[in-house]
Image (cartoon, rainbow, N blue to C red; front, side):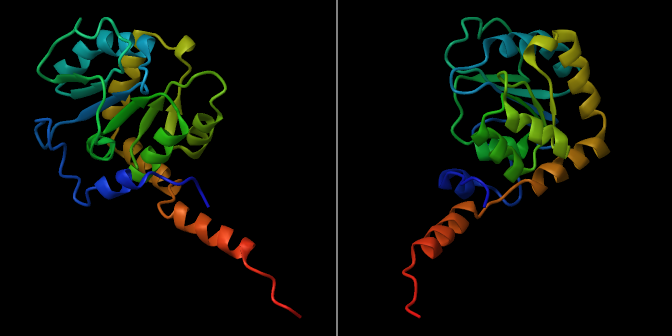
Length: 199
């Protein structure tokens, strides 16, 4: 049946991928979204900021959700680099992003599947959900301990230059999505709890 997705996320999906209502990004710009979870992934944040100059020089925009524990949040500044501690409209962000760099929490992966967004996943150890994404071709799995700034910079640049590869990742993510999981679960529970008819 899949895993239920919060209704607010599904309600916020935009059928025409119009963009981010409160962040002014050119409609034809390539967008990298970085999401480290509610607490922030400080090591990932540091790598992203170190790699960001090369990405923005290539014309990309970065929307970086840093969490609240990053003391170096203001150490890099550029008009094409937007950082926020939180962002409420993740549906719009994931739909607008060409590529997401993220931890691999279950909710995040489900939302990436629904928005069919290619991803680079740097999970905490033993994040088996990320392995499933990689095996399906929906994302690339790279352990934080094995990833350097230079490798991340090259990895992102390579993916963004491969339109067909991004499309294949997007379609693979879409195949993993289940938008009606809550309804299926309700139907299953109702069927199992129904009184057995007398013979």
